[in-house]
Image (tube, rainbow, N blue to C red):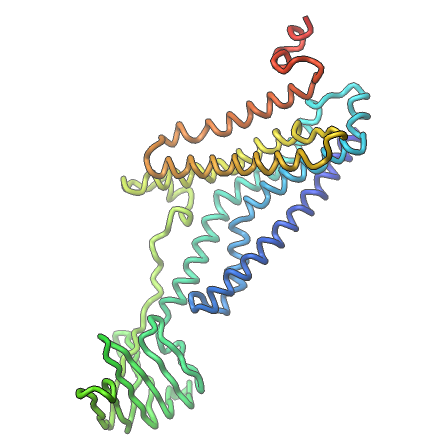
Length: 371
Protein backbone atom coordinates (compact mmCIF):
# COMPACT_ATOMS: atom_id res chain seq x y z
CA UNK A 1 0.00 0.00 0.00
CA UNK A 2 2.85 2.39 0.88
CA UNK A 3 4.59 1.62 -2.40
CA UNK A 4 1.38 2.18 -4.37
CA UNK A 5 0.78 5.55 -2.72
CA UNK A 6 4.39 6.57 -3.37
CA UNK A 7 4.04 5.42 -6.98
CA UNK A 8 0.88 7.47 -7.56
CA UNK A 9 2.44 10.54 -5.93
CA UNK A 10 5.62 10.32 -8.02
CA UNK A 11 3.67 9.68 -11.21
CA UNK A 12 1.47 12.72 -10.54
CA UNK A 13 4.39 15.10 -9.95
CA UNK A 14 6.45 13.70 -12.82
CA UNK A 15 3.57 13.77 -15.30
CA UNK A 16 2.80 17.36 -14.33
CA UNK A 17 6.44 18.39 -14.68
CA UNK A 18 6.91 16.72 -18.07
CA UNK A 19 3.61 18.18 -19.28
CA UNK A 20 4.62 21.71 -18.28
CA UNK A 21 7.94 21.36 -20.08
CA UNK A 22 6.26 20.11 -23.26
CA UNK A 23 3.61 22.85 -23.13
CA UNK A 24 6.33 25.48 -22.70
CA UNK A 25 8.19 24.14 -25.74
CA UNK A 26 4.94 24.02 -27.73
CA UNK A 27 3.95 27.57 -26.82
CA UNK A 28 7.42 28.89 -27.67
CA UNK A 29 7.25 27.24 -31.09
CA UNK A 30 3.73 28.53 -31.72
CA UNK A 31 4.67 32.08 -30.69
CA UNK A 32 7.46 32.17 -33.27
CA UNK A 33 5.26 30.60 -35.95
CA UNK A 34 2.10 32.65 -35.45
CA UNK A 35 3.92 35.95 -34.95
CA UNK A 36 5.60 35.21 -38.27
CA UNK A 37 2.16 34.81 -39.86
CA UNK A 38 1.07 38.08 -38.25
CA UNK A 39 4.14 39.87 -39.61
CA UNK A 40 3.33 38.57 -43.11
CA UNK A 41 -0.27 39.77 -42.86
CA UNK A 42 -1.79 36.28 -42.85
CA UNK A 43 -3.42 36.71 -39.43
CA UNK A 44 -4.40 39.69 -37.34
CA UNK A 45 -1.71 40.53 -34.74
CA UNK A 46 -4.52 41.13 -32.23
CA UNK A 47 -5.61 37.50 -32.66
CA UNK A 48 -2.12 36.05 -32.20
CA UNK A 49 -2.52 35.08 -28.53
CA UNK A 50 -5.97 33.59 -29.17
CA UNK A 51 -4.57 31.47 -32.02
CA UNK A 52 -1.67 30.33 -29.82
CA UNK A 53 -4.10 29.28 -27.08
CA UNK A 54 -6.33 27.42 -29.56
CA UNK A 55 -3.38 25.59 -31.13
CA UNK A 56 -2.10 24.59 -27.69
CA UNK A 57 -5.52 23.23 -26.75
CA UNK A 58 -5.66 21.32 -30.02
CA UNK A 59 -2.37 19.51 -29.36
CA UNK A 60 -3.11 18.94 -25.67
CA UNK A 61 -4.06 15.30 -26.30
CA UNK A 62 -0.74 14.52 -27.97
CA UNK A 63 1.22 16.35 -25.26
CA UNK A 64 -0.63 14.48 -22.52
CA UNK A 65 0.04 11.14 -24.23
CA UNK A 66 3.77 11.82 -24.40
CA UNK A 67 3.80 13.16 -20.82
CA UNK A 68 2.14 10.02 -19.45
CA UNK A 69 4.53 7.71 -21.31
CA UNK A 70 7.67 9.61 -20.28
CA UNK A 71 6.49 10.00 -16.67
CA UNK A 72 5.94 6.26 -16.16
CA UNK A 73 9.33 5.59 -17.70
CA UNK A 74 11.18 8.19 -15.60
CA UNK A 75 9.63 7.06 -12.30
CA UNK A 76 10.34 3.36 -12.84
CA UNK A 77 13.86 4.04 -14.10
CA UNK A 78 14.57 5.96 -10.89
CA UNK A 79 13.14 3.12 -8.84
CA UNK A 80 15.49 0.66 -10.54
CA UNK A 81 18.43 3.04 -10.17
CA UNK A 82 17.81 3.67 -6.44
CA UNK A 83 17.17 -0.05 -5.72
CA UNK A 84 13.55 0.58 -4.72
CA UNK A 85 12.47 -2.10 -7.18
CA UNK A 86 14.70 -4.56 -5.32
CA UNK A 87 12.64 -3.90 -2.19
CA UNK A 88 9.49 -4.35 -4.28
CA UNK A 89 10.70 -7.73 -5.58
CA UNK A 90 11.96 -8.79 -2.14
CA UNK A 91 8.44 -8.26 -0.81
CA UNK A 92 7.22 -11.07 -3.04
CA UNK A 93 5.85 -8.82 -5.77
CA UNK A 94 6.70 -8.88 -9.47
CA UNK A 95 6.53 -6.54 -12.43
CA UNK A 96 2.94 -7.60 -13.06
CA UNK A 97 1.92 -6.09 -9.72
CA UNK A 98 2.87 -2.68 -11.08
CA UNK A 99 0.31 -2.87 -13.88
CA UNK A 100 -2.78 -2.31 -11.76
CA UNK A 101 -1.67 0.82 -9.80
CA UNK A 102 -0.17 2.37 -12.94
CA UNK A 103 -3.35 1.74 -14.93
CA UNK A 104 -5.42 3.16 -12.07
CA UNK A 105 -3.38 6.35 -12.34
CA UNK A 106 -3.36 6.40 -16.15
CA UNK A 107 -7.03 5.57 -16.83
CA UNK A 108 -8.44 9.05 -15.96
CA UNK A 109 -5.74 10.66 -18.09
CA UNK A 110 -6.48 8.32 -21.00
CA UNK A 111 -10.17 9.27 -20.75
CA UNK A 112 -9.15 12.95 -20.83
CA UNK A 113 -6.97 12.24 -23.88
CA UNK A 114 -9.94 10.62 -25.62
CA UNK A 115 -12.20 13.62 -24.86
CA UNK A 116 -9.54 16.06 -26.06
CA UNK A 117 -8.99 14.12 -29.28
CA UNK A 118 -12.68 13.65 -30.04
CA UNK A 119 -14.04 17.08 -29.14
CA UNK A 120 -11.40 19.72 -28.28
CA UNK A 121 -9.15 18.96 -31.28
CA UNK A 122 -11.81 19.68 -33.98
CA UNK A 123 -13.22 22.65 -32.07
CA UNK A 124 -9.83 24.39 -31.74
CA UNK A 125 -9.01 23.79 -35.40
CA UNK A 126 -12.38 25.16 -36.49
CA UNK A 127 -12.08 28.29 -34.36
CA UNK A 128 -8.55 28.96 -35.63
CA UNK A 129 -9.75 28.69 -39.23
CA UNK A 130 -12.70 31.02 -38.62
CA UNK A 131 -10.46 33.65 -37.02
CA UNK A 132 -8.01 33.50 -39.93
CA UNK A 133 -10.79 33.58 -42.53
CA UNK A 134 -12.52 36.47 -40.80
CA UNK A 135 -9.32 38.50 -41.01
CA UNK A 136 -8.73 37.62 -44.65
CA UNK A 137 -12.34 38.43 -45.58
CA UNK A 138 -12.43 41.75 -43.74
CA UNK A 139 -13.77 44.72 -45.74
CA UNK A 140 -11.50 47.57 -46.70
CA UNK A 141 -13.31 50.17 -44.62
CA UNK A 142 -12.56 48.25 -41.44
CA UNK A 143 -8.86 48.88 -42.04
CA UNK A 144 -9.10 52.64 -42.56
CA UNK A 145 -7.29 54.51 -39.78
CA UNK A 146 -6.36 58.18 -39.59
CA UNK A 147 -2.76 58.95 -40.46
CA UNK A 148 -1.89 55.43 -41.66
CA UNK A 149 -1.49 53.75 -45.03
CA UNK A 150 -3.72 50.67 -45.13
CA UNK A 151 -3.67 47.88 -47.68
CA UNK A 152 -6.80 46.02 -48.75
CA UNK A 153 -7.34 42.35 -48.04
CA UNK A 154 -6.35 41.36 -51.59
CA UNK A 155 -3.40 43.78 -51.69
CA UNK A 156 -4.81 45.60 -54.74
CA UNK A 157 -5.80 48.84 -53.02
CA UNK A 158 -4.10 51.29 -50.64
CA UNK A 159 -5.88 53.97 -48.57
CA UNK A 160 -4.59 56.94 -46.63
CA UNK A 161 -6.81 59.30 -44.65
CA UNK A 162 -5.37 62.16 -42.66
CA UNK A 163 -8.47 62.80 -40.52
CA UNK A 164 -11.48 60.62 -39.78
CA UNK A 165 -14.70 61.47 -37.96
CA UNK A 166 -16.37 58.12 -37.14
CA UNK A 167 -19.60 59.72 -35.90
CA UNK A 168 -20.25 61.71 -39.09
CA UNK A 169 -18.42 59.26 -41.40
CA UNK A 170 -16.46 62.22 -42.75
CA UNK A 171 -12.85 62.00 -43.95
CA UNK A 172 -10.29 64.59 -44.97
CA UNK A 173 -7.24 64.56 -47.23
CA UNK A 174 -7.80 61.16 -48.84
CA UNK A 175 -5.39 59.16 -50.93
CA UNK A 176 -6.64 56.02 -52.71
CA UNK A 177 -4.50 53.90 -55.04
CA UNK A 178 -6.19 51.08 -56.99
CA UNK A 179 -4.55 48.51 -59.26
CA UNK A 180 -6.89 46.76 -61.67
CA UNK A 181 -6.03 44.73 -64.77
CA UNK A 182 -2.44 45.92 -64.51
CA UNK A 183 -3.46 49.59 -64.64
CA UNK A 184 -2.77 51.93 -61.73
CA UNK A 185 -5.32 54.54 -60.69
CA UNK A 186 -4.65 57.13 -57.97
CA UNK A 187 -7.28 59.49 -56.57
CA UNK A 188 -6.65 62.33 -54.13
CA UNK A 189 -9.19 64.67 -52.56
CA UNK A 190 -9.41 67.18 -49.75
CA UNK A 191 -12.72 65.93 -48.31
CA UNK A 192 -15.06 62.97 -48.53
CA UNK A 193 -17.39 60.70 -46.64
CA UNK A 194 -18.25 57.01 -46.21
CA UNK A 195 -21.51 56.01 -47.89
CA UNK A 196 -23.63 52.96 -47.06
CA UNK A 197 -26.01 51.63 -49.70
CA UNK A 198 -29.20 49.64 -49.14
CA UNK A 199 -27.69 46.39 -50.38
CA UNK A 200 -24.91 46.60 -47.77
CA UNK A 201 -22.16 47.85 -50.06
CA UNK A 202 -19.88 50.53 -48.66
CA UNK A 203 -18.15 53.26 -50.65
CA UNK A 204 -15.92 56.25 -50.06
CA UNK A 205 -17.08 59.38 -51.89
CA UNK A 206 -14.27 61.85 -52.64
CA UNK A 207 -15.06 65.55 -53.21
CA UNK A 208 -13.07 68.12 -55.21
CA UNK A 209 -10.05 66.08 -56.18
CA UNK A 210 -7.92 64.64 -58.95
CA UNK A 211 -7.53 61.22 -60.45
CA UNK A 212 -4.38 59.92 -62.13
CA UNK A 213 -4.64 56.89 -64.44
CA UNK A 214 -1.76 54.92 -65.88
CA UNK A 215 1.95 55.67 -65.76
CA UNK A 216 3.41 59.10 -66.49
CA UNK A 217 5.80 57.60 -69.09
CA UNK A 218 2.97 55.99 -71.08
CA UNK A 219 0.97 57.79 -73.82
CA UNK A 220 -2.37 56.80 -72.24
CA UNK A 221 -1.60 58.56 -68.96
CA UNK A 222 -4.50 60.82 -67.90
CA UNK A 223 -5.16 63.42 -65.21
CA UNK A 224 -8.84 63.99 -64.38
CA UNK A 225 -10.39 66.54 -62.06
CA UNK A 226 -13.69 65.70 -60.38
CA UNK A 227 -16.22 67.24 -58.08
CA UNK A 228 -17.31 63.84 -56.80
CA UNK A 229 -15.70 60.45 -57.23
CA UNK A 230 -16.94 57.20 -55.69
CA UNK A 231 -14.73 54.20 -55.02
CA UNK A 232 -16.49 51.08 -53.88
CA UNK A 233 -15.31 49.10 -50.92
CA UNK A 234 -16.07 45.42 -51.18
CA UNK A 235 -17.94 44.72 -47.98
CA UNK A 236 -18.07 40.95 -47.56
CA UNK A 237 -19.68 38.69 -45.03
CA UNK A 238 -17.23 36.52 -43.19
CA UNK A 239 -18.63 33.30 -44.59
CA UNK A 240 -17.65 30.13 -42.77
CA UNK A 241 -15.55 27.98 -45.10
CA UNK A 242 -16.46 24.32 -45.46
CA UNK A 243 -14.84 22.41 -42.59
CA UNK A 244 -11.81 20.25 -43.18
CA UNK A 245 -11.62 16.72 -41.80
CA UNK A 246 -9.71 17.83 -38.69
CA UNK A 247 -12.38 20.48 -38.03
CA UNK A 248 -15.41 18.20 -38.18
CA UNK A 249 -17.15 16.92 -35.07
CA UNK A 250 -17.61 13.21 -34.49
CA UNK A 251 -21.25 13.50 -35.58
CA UNK A 252 -20.24 15.18 -38.86
CA UNK A 253 -17.60 12.55 -39.53
CA UNK A 254 -20.12 9.74 -39.07
CA UNK A 255 -23.02 11.36 -40.90
CA UNK A 256 -21.26 12.45 -44.09
CA UNK A 257 -22.70 10.53 -47.05
CA UNK A 258 -20.59 12.03 -49.85
CA UNK A 259 -18.42 9.26 -51.37
CA UNK A 260 -15.50 11.64 -51.91
CA UNK A 261 -15.31 12.44 -48.17
CA UNK A 262 -16.13 9.09 -46.57
CA UNK A 263 -12.56 7.74 -46.57
CA UNK A 264 -11.08 11.01 -45.32
CA UNK A 265 -13.65 11.22 -42.52
CA UNK A 266 -13.05 7.63 -41.47
CA UNK A 267 -9.29 8.22 -41.47
CA UNK A 268 -9.71 11.24 -39.20
CA UNK A 269 -11.93 9.24 -36.86
CA UNK A 270 -9.35 6.44 -36.82
CA UNK A 271 -6.66 8.89 -35.68
CA UNK A 272 -8.83 10.34 -32.91
CA UNK A 273 -9.77 6.93 -31.57
CA UNK A 274 -6.20 5.69 -31.97
CA UNK A 275 -4.69 8.40 -29.78
CA UNK A 276 -6.06 7.14 -26.40
CA UNK A 277 -5.36 3.57 -27.48
CA UNK A 278 -1.78 4.59 -28.24
CA UNK A 279 -1.53 6.17 -24.78
CA UNK A 280 -2.64 2.85 -23.21
CA UNK A 281 -0.17 0.84 -25.29
CA UNK A 282 2.73 3.16 -24.45
CA UNK A 283 1.99 3.01 -20.72
CA UNK A 284 2.06 -0.79 -20.76
CA UNK A 285 5.26 -0.84 -22.81
CA UNK A 286 6.92 1.63 -20.42
CA UNK A 287 6.57 -0.78 -17.46
CA UNK A 288 9.05 -3.43 -18.70
CA UNK A 289 11.02 -0.92 -20.78
CA UNK A 290 12.07 0.96 -17.62
CA UNK A 291 14.33 -1.87 -16.45
CA UNK A 292 17.83 -0.50 -15.86
CA UNK A 293 21.02 -2.50 -15.66
CA UNK A 294 23.47 -0.34 -13.66
CA UNK A 295 26.35 -1.69 -15.73
CA UNK A 296 24.80 -0.45 -19.00
CA UNK A 297 23.86 3.07 -17.89
CA UNK A 298 20.60 4.84 -17.19
CA UNK A 299 19.76 6.30 -20.60
CA UNK A 300 19.27 3.13 -22.63
CA UNK A 301 15.57 2.94 -21.76
CA UNK A 302 14.99 6.56 -22.79
CA UNK A 303 16.60 5.93 -26.18
CA UNK A 304 14.33 2.95 -26.81
CA UNK A 305 11.32 4.96 -25.57
CA UNK A 306 11.90 7.72 -28.14
CA UNK A 307 12.32 5.11 -30.87
CA UNK A 308 9.13 3.26 -29.88
CA UNK A 309 7.08 6.45 -29.72
CA UNK A 310 8.26 7.59 -33.15
CA UNK A 311 7.51 4.20 -34.69
CA UNK A 312 4.08 3.99 -33.02
CA UNK A 313 2.95 7.51 -33.95
CA UNK A 314 4.27 7.25 -37.50
CA UNK A 315 2.51 3.93 -38.03
CA UNK A 316 -0.72 5.51 -36.79
CA UNK A 317 -0.31 8.43 -39.20
CA UNK A 318 0.61 6.06 -42.03
CA UNK A 319 -2.50 3.98 -41.41
CA UNK A 320 -4.58 7.17 -41.40
CA UNK A 321 -3.15 8.10 -44.82
CA UNK A 322 -3.84 4.63 -46.22
CA UNK A 323 -7.44 4.74 -45.03
CA UNK A 324 -7.86 8.26 -46.41
CA UNK A 325 -6.60 7.12 -49.81
CA UNK A 326 -8.87 4.08 -49.78
CA UNK A 327 -5.97 1.58 -49.78
CA UNK A 328 -6.98 0.07 -46.42
CA UNK A 329 -10.44 -0.48 -44.98
CA UNK A 330 -11.00 1.46 -41.75
CA UNK A 331 -12.12 -1.68 -39.90
CA UNK A 332 -8.87 -3.42 -40.87
CA UNK A 333 -6.68 -0.41 -40.11
CA UNK A 334 -7.99 0.53 -36.69
CA UNK A 335 -6.80 -2.46 -34.66
CA UNK A 336 -3.51 -4.09 -35.89
CA UNK A 337 -1.12 -1.39 -34.59
CA UNK A 338 -2.65 -1.36 -31.11
CA UNK A 339 -2.87 -5.14 -30.90
CA UNK A 340 0.82 -5.40 -31.84
CA UNK A 341 1.65 -2.84 -29.12
CA UNK A 342 -0.29 -4.83 -26.50
CA UNK A 343 1.40 -8.07 -27.60
CA UNK A 344 4.80 -6.38 -27.44
CA UNK A 345 4.02 -5.12 -23.92
CA UNK A 346 2.95 -8.63 -22.88
CA UNK A 347 6.13 -10.21 -24.24
CA UNK A 348 8.35 -7.61 -22.57
CA UNK A 349 6.58 -7.97 -19.22
CA UNK A 350 6.92 -11.76 -19.29
CA UNK A 351 10.62 -11.37 -20.13
CA UNK A 352 11.08 -9.32 -16.96
CA UNK A 353 9.22 -11.84 -14.72
CA UNK A 354 11.90 -14.53 -14.87
CA UNK A 355 14.98 -13.37 -16.79
CA UNK A 356 16.91 -16.55 -15.87
CA UNK A 357 14.87 -18.61 -18.35
CA UNK A 358 15.36 -18.60 -22.10
CA UNK A 359 13.25 -15.97 -23.88
CA UNK A 360 10.91 -18.51 -25.50
CA UNK A 361 10.23 -20.30 -22.16
CA UNK A 362 9.30 -16.97 -20.54
CA UNK A 363 6.27 -16.71 -22.80
CA UNK A 364 4.83 -20.00 -21.50
CA UNK A 365 2.62 -20.25 -18.40
CA UNK A 366 4.59 -20.53 -15.16
CA UNK A 367 3.63 -24.15 -14.44
CA UNK A 368 4.77 -25.25 -17.93
CA UNK A 369 7.94 -23.14 -18.01
CA UNK A 370 9.11 -24.52 -14.65
CA UNK A 371 9.11 -28.12 -15.91
